[in-house]
Length: 301
Image (cartoon, rainbow, N blue to C red; front, top):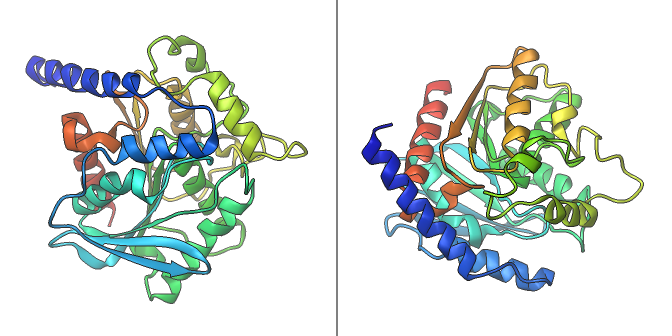
């Protein structure tokens, strides 16, 4: 990275930080969801993207297609939001531009959210989306599964469920700022607390308490895929910002995947905050991260 690129990144991420600071996180779940939708959709989807709403098994979902993309290949995307917020709307710009970079269709779903629908509702919805793609004739080796934050967690858990059932797996995984350890044992929860504008231990504890039933161990591999046996998992790209409290969730996942002989690429992006590609319209580093993800996926496929 050149000095000019780094200075641009600092300027642009500073503007995103200011945007977040100007709209502090509200208290109620409905208000939090509305706020994330508002902040995430500050910049509209590009005019050349074609979006199409679809409903299957009672789930709202959305296809997207950028010019020149291969309709036979699909990115199945799970949004972040701690399993309690986030939606197709909040992540539409991110997923549609990811599809452009990967040169494939995307399918984003509005899975059920906690606390109204705790674990395992989200996992059931993720599996329903996988089955829907099969009914559409999309074969596993043309599917990329990915997501940010809790969506990265859900991506890993879906693969774990498929592997346990002896089913074919997606061709690769794309994980942005993945939340992999709901026991919150990562060191950077403390060391990055002062510089992360979004994710803090108390907030994560609130989310985890809403999502995980009291009688379920938070180190269950389906809850915290950091503790899963990753043997046989497909190649994965992990992207995380250096200014994130969840940095160690990503680095420890990369270590675990490597130890399990999984092909893994870990990218730590200087100065970036949680799920920064969401703001790719105004963030050069967000666009570069998506371009890097696109190259990784095209190289695998």
